[in-house]
Image (cartoon, rainbow over all chains, first blue to last red):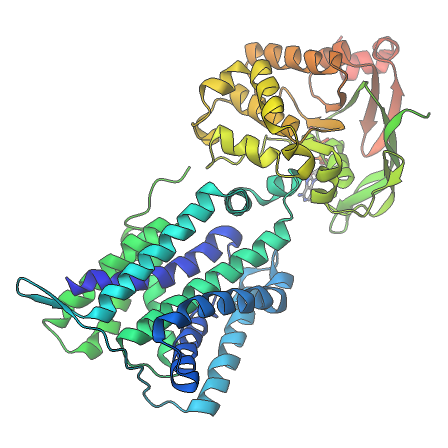
Length: 278
Length: 238
Ligand SMILES: Nc1ncnc2c1ncn2[C@@H]1O[C@H](COP(=O)(O)OP(=O)(O)OP(=O)(O)O)[C@@H](O)[C@H]1O
Ligand SMILES: [Mg+2]
């Protein structure tokens, strides 16, 4: 099913959102802007300097990370420990600035990055090459994130800060730096997801909101603060989308997703696929 | 006092507008076990928070190894060997025993000689060795306190500060933990202990401070404090 391939990329985006939430209890409303930034970075790198599309991915990861770290210090750091609304407002205003600038430069027209990849046919299904490669790259990035979080000292420190920030500080972990690093990772994941989405679908400056909503639905499905759950939730959302598309026009998917979001929040406030957390 | 490892001078601190500490001074000597006792809400935990820097002191000075460390962030203090086992353990509950201990050794000083120290910690608390891959959140209170102390030891502390060693524990666990504390003290570790169980605390300590309402009430060797009528009545229940 194609939904699994596309959904895994939704999962990647949601992983960025959920990582930031898990580590610092911050709902990052620059998430959509980061996804769009990934899309346009791909567009600029391929059309501007003729870079092969997938070579842009490492650049976008690194650039997204650096921008995320900077964003942490600009918009998030001073809000930590203040009422949650403050962070929503400050990240939302960054979002508005980015989208505003994007609209001023590129307008709201449709963009498309042509990626020539042969598809694969299996029995009666044909999978597009970009969808397959996007899912494979998602798996690689998600796997790397897992290795980082569970098998490196710094990654374990990220989990320690997520688990108990004061205790982390007391064992000598510079927790503020870990927060900025985690924010950087979250933005890098969002940017990478945006880039991979742009290899599959056309996009506009305003696409961010729709994908940010998808990320929220995915985290609702997968459980907030749970990167592995995000991947499962993403695949589930991809399947729902693919299924719904057979019965109704594509323009309805957002409505379906929003309804799904609300229903899931009411019935499973801690996530459908939330793994047990102690 | 040339062998003072930690000196707190005229410490005041509080939360928001509320002042809790009103000019507290105390000293922990190298190689000794110093105890801080006081009623609920007297400000013991607040003192330790201000010493470690998880809350900012309002005024006063904290000297550690002869240096003024008053304004250093807590994680820097840990890297210098000023280590707190916090009230309520504060373990990394989603992480395994091994991971908790590894995080205890996050600072460079802890990373150096890691495996030797790990062996010593497991000798002290064999129970932890049997459960290395288990998550800390699944442990009983006594095991959690063992792990919290073990995590503190993995930092290779110059001074180990323990807030409420016996808090919420069954008598057998309390007995085991005080045994471990005695072992550590005999091995030469400097300890600053905050403890509700004044009987036990006095039995193991070299020197004690009694605080009341954020001020020093009295200080002295436990034997002489235990002879004071007001201490006997208020803290020893005699
Ligand atoms: N986070 C906080 N915010 C506001 N007030 C606090 C906070 N923590 C403690 N206090 C107040 O500060 C005073 C001292 O508390 P502290 O925890 O230092 O006492 P303690 O001596 O450690 O007591 P206990 O034996 O209960 O642990 C108390 O009146 C308490 O209500
Ligand atoms: Mg206390």
